[in-house]
Image (tube, rainbow, N blue to C red; front, side, top):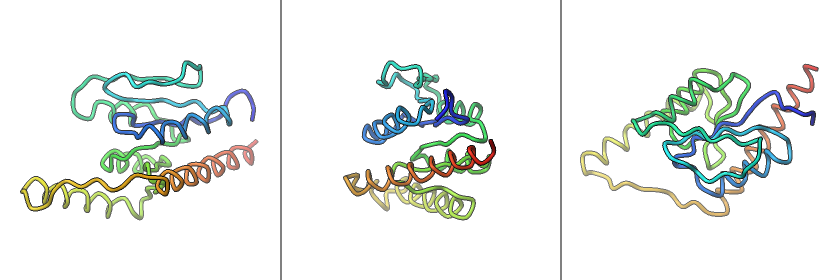
Length: 161
């Protein structure tokens, strides 16, 4: 890899699992890719010029808005926030969640509709809030998906040069 990679990784860091952050950091160091972490509070990140922490105000969606406004079309995003993922997919940004799912124009509308439906059930007291298990399987799915998407991007840029 040359001195600078033609794309960055953006992390919606407010709810990013530590394991995901660690995997991204490991890949970024190995491939010399800059990573931007956006959150409404300080998130511990390594002291390295590859990593930047963007602290946003605490208003609703401030970090999401910051990411959408500052991400470049060649960049990659990691978020578990489906409305944010929808906004990024609209901008043709490669976006994946912490379980390795790559959001696409084909699947984002269904994911957003299901999220809104479950939120409505929860808000009406019909369904308890659930969080799925996040273990080794999910971590491996994320790592494999991130590796696959990064390799696609690197191949795409090396073919252009």
